[in-house]
Image (cartoon, rainbow over all chains, first blue to last red; front, side, top):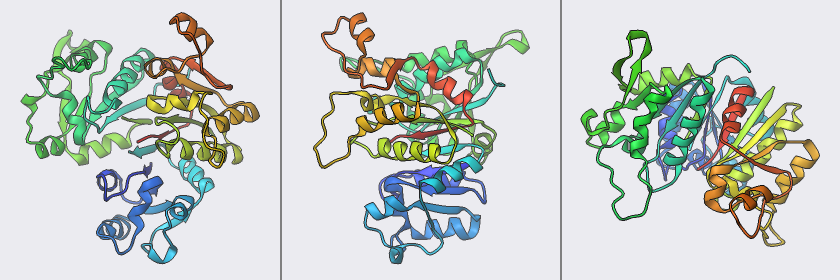
Length: 102
Length: 135
Length: 130
């Protein structure tokens, strides 16, 4: 199942919940304000890094939403993969369903 | 029409402050007519939707809390409540409305609809669904 | 593959309507079928033709209308949510004795059953909300 998260982890617990409910190896896509979770120097970075390293979650961020918010590659957690809308559609198609953590 | 789908309505917002709980419930009630395999999940502030004693008083706001009692009649029989979310808010099962359904397999015995589940159990249930709605 | 999309927020107030639109375009560009876009909650405000955004901004409503025309996408506004928020087509306006209607071209107003049907008929339902 593909999980999408559109809330900043600094605002709401949606990403935390997503990580708690996502089974190991699942794709998680950060969109809209959800992309603020990628900031490597942020206090929620360790939560994202743990999800990637310990639960093999595949964490993606929507490139246009990163760009819109002025987040550069250099500021990002290394393991987060940047995709576009085609990538989003492909992830949704490959997964059996989509869970939107709002 | 396609085969029966497993649909879960996930509620993570408190009632009244925003419209999501009310309009989410409207989807569940309409959806019941489609005879799919439906369940509801309540987590985070969503557990507040089920609290006893909600009273609109003179706010003019529609109190839809009693509507949850109709769910059993609509064959919505599985209401999963995240145990931890309840605990975090200092609530216990008895603080929630007593919601029931009639089990047609057991001579229409009245059974509780609300089931307290761990996050692990709810995660497994979510995984089994075909469609997830979020309100 | 068959997709359905649910849009729960008003344009400009929330990015959900933008994300949903770009996702819809990508679904079609990838050769998938888009069965329906269903507008619920404040998302019904995507369907008012009276929206007049500033010239230097995108026109969310017009963009949806163009998508419906170009790609024959079924844009459905929930009737119950629309009535609460003052979105009406000609029939709805007449039925409720209103002096005006405001539904944009390419949209239609219908019941919540259309959302459930969209979920049943499609292989994937993708929700964009707050």
